[in-house]
Amino acid sequence: MAFHPGPFDHAVAAAAGNDRALEAQLRTGFVESVERQIDLMRRARCDANWRMAAQHLHAVAAGFHAEEIMRLADQAAMGVPGDPHALREISDQLDVIRGAGSR
Image (cartoon, rainbow, N blue to C red; front, side):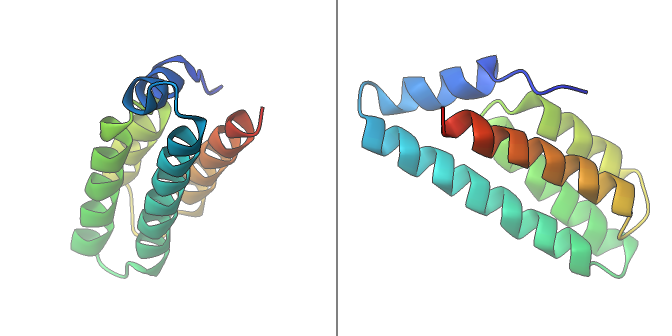
């Protein structure tokens, strides 16, 4: 599924106002937070740790209205720990967000 930057970009822009530096910092903070949760998901060896990391990922994404990552986090939470397909989809969406920030 394709990333639609609208809600995410609007959330970041609204929080930053006209401050481009703050907008870049917010975007970087979001990316780093998502990367941390992906790392925790990769290292999860039990269902509880996997679900907790996926739920935290959902919360981070919700704070920035990153709807596709929220959906993928919910989907992952219902899966098995270390699901490579789920991790790849989330990472792919994060790459799209990174790319959208460099426009």
